[in-house]
Image 1 (cartoon, rainbow, N blue to C red):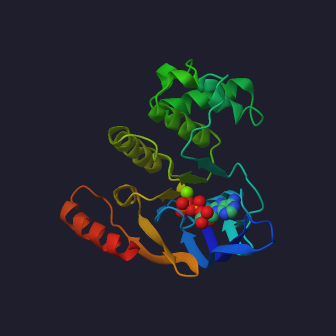
Image 2 (cartoon, rainbow, N blue to C red):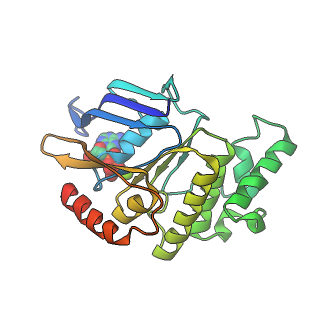
Length: 247
Ligand code: ADP
Ligand code: MG
């Protein structure tokens, strides 16, 4: 159970139209235990989004196996909630309308409304449920995106640099909220970032991805103990270690 990635290979066709391919990675193995928070950390272009999209069912691996809670991934599914860097809210719907949109086919209108309200409260946006996306800050939009993903009640949450476009202060606030929500809901989380501190703050385990000649692959995994509060000295040391492993 959890997320199991075994011996996964992914290539993309080259842009010249001659039928050539470029390998993003091969031989990738990764397990995320149920309820575990794992960050994929690595420089831009190393294949983090590609791997997350494969788990989300938005990209297909060329070979290998990917299962989420024992089910083979064949496409997107409500068992996996996804949050991207851009919230991509529907501008013609209110905040609550955006959350309801994804769940209204699965429950009655009254239930959908109640569910949306519950998750908007969780991300502290109850007061804005009637607002439109253009009235919100970037951080608030991301909180709507998180509420929208949670409202589907997925077992697994996949997040691809969800706070990458936000300022430091907003990001730090959202880190606290994500940790709180994670503690409350016990979701399995695969979180993509290129921010070392962010990965260290949030994760049970960090999987480092690095660029190597001829391919891009997972290079190392670091386990982090919880709770984090008293770890500052060790944190600085660990950050240095991770930095040197990535370079
Ligand atoms: P990251 O998320 O770590 O920044 P990506 O997974 O987005 O990296 O990209 C990994 C590599 O795959 C990059 O070299 C990128 O250019 C390439 N790539 C990603 N998506 C496509 C695509 N749809 N077509 C061709 N190449 C792609
Ligand atoms: Mg990416």
